[in-house]
Image (tube, rainbow, N blue to C red; front, side, top):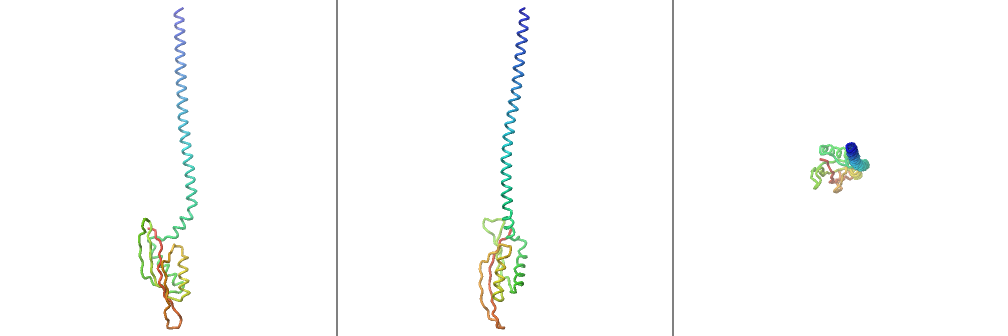
Length: 176
């Protein structure tokens, strides 16, 4: 009976060890799955946070787009300097004044690597009201033009009408 009892105890012990091993393995698998679930949850939260940031950035960019387009419209491309000068001369012809471009210079702007400053000095001849119309229309061009100086003087005319001569210095930013 001792052998039966011994066999029985060994069987029970083996069964107990097997149950403990299987239970431990089962608990390890559950623990491992829970740990992986925690990692996935943290990654999901991080992804959600980044998605919210991206939505915010997209909204900011969408709101800024009209301003960016306005700035782009106010600048001229470096390759379009001659077109800009042609535009000034055509504006002069349209308003009935004679415009002579005296000097053009392109100067770098400190701390602005992608922009330069175009400076134009011109002489305008014509009637006072036409010179003033021309000057006003310059300011209404889509480019961000700054009239740096303006001087006008009356010149005697042979036909009895007064004629004016003015010197205008203006500048505009160009995109490089």
